[in-house]
Length: 385
Image (cartoon, rainbow, N blue to C red; front, side, top):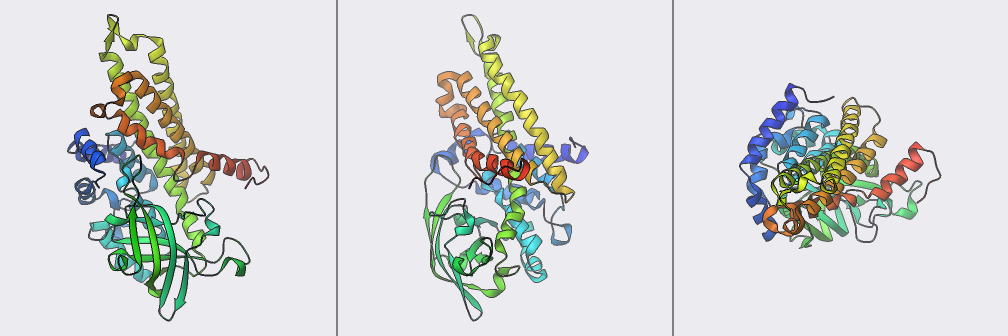
């Protein structure tokens, strides 16, 4: 379950790439709200973003465990895997449910970097996490779907070639189950923008290239339907366990970064003629953060192991994400408090990483909804929503 030779080599390789993109690189991008194109290109050339793509399509054929290690190391090195992590789990919808023709057409290009699939169009302004109430419609007309609606908090659309989008193909009042009637379309963004798709950037507290999408009479070929019409909700759910495990790994990477920075600063910073790290009031929050990150890491590995074996892992994936998000946020607070006023200074990078890791209390699913999931599906308490 813990690092084997492959895992050690992966960590070493990712760290080597990250060493060429120091704190100043991420600081500059954050200030400009710019996309880390050079970093993503380096990861792509190294084959790391194709980790989950089978070898027959040009990928590495690794499991979710290895993919999570790659993303963990990016965040642990001071970077932000949010710029590219969606390419790993979004691709899974195409891999698991796409046709042979779709997989042969797109996966090799995604693997070698000639095609970028990093956008995932699900969330809407009026439905939020209640995906079954989704309002964006796709009406079939001949060999095309005509799509109308709106999406919000969709990241990396401006820097992707393709987007996987969830749409409603059967009106809600005509389905037997609320999870029916949703379908998944593969949208060619280079053709769609300006031809029914309008993108409006949303400036947020972290640099994730987040946007709002306005869709008006967008035409998508029927051949771009992934899987069966009306079964899309299940396809999307199928990839959420992978997403939660990968996000948990990013949080663990953040947590380790915060703990390392806080520990180093506590050893170096001298006040009242001694290092501040000698004070238990400084030691204890850092030590507690370390303990909780290590515990969350165990749950991450357990969830990843179950996922890679093809066994049910919904509870473990959700718990891993919750524990890791809580632990990284705790570590962020400990690091900021340890640095005192300098923690708010951009040049120390704590404030940047502090903002970035705060996101995972809310997305890709809030901690409260995870607790609701555990209450209902694990503890068998009544459904609360």
